[in-house]
Length: 216
Image 1: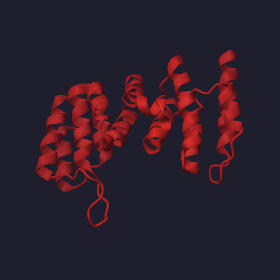
Image 2 (image 1 turned 45 degrees about the horizontal axis):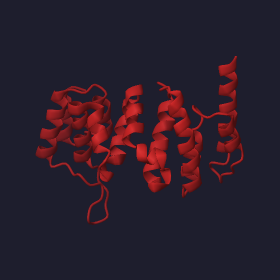
Image 3 (image 1 turned 30 degrees about the vertical axis):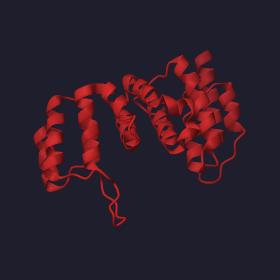
Image 4 (image 1 turned 90 degrees about the vertical axis):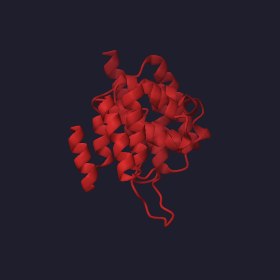
């Protein structure tokens, strides 16, 4: 989308987060400058919750994250990830960019979560979701062998400390692309409630099929 299209959508109220994320795939200084100016002009909100309890789209925060990436690349996003309120926004953009460099940046930016997923289960859950999307859905990113080892430990630990069936299912699903035989056994040994009840079997079967294909 052109800068002029972004400005037009912003002023007529039709600009959405998805537009910003897609444009961020091709970062440039002009986009950063336009977003900074629009955020100030339109007085976009930073928070997603109003004092009344109503919800709103925090376009100013998304604009900040996208403009930071446009100016400072992945190093800028890694720095922003250190701010707890920005973690989910950074994960969302890295997931949208979806290439090896963004995957590497994800693991580096959130290395503390990867090492200790139970320290912040909600953020770790978002990381697991991004890993699942980046490694299992086209265009697929390939994890390096050492990253696969690290992620297997992360996902199994996350499963153990997750507080919901959705979180546990996501931890298992993210194992599909990097799981080994022990991961398949781990998944097969689990039981989840509906609508996630088929996930353990699906994951175990997928891992074993992938391992057999790799040996052929």
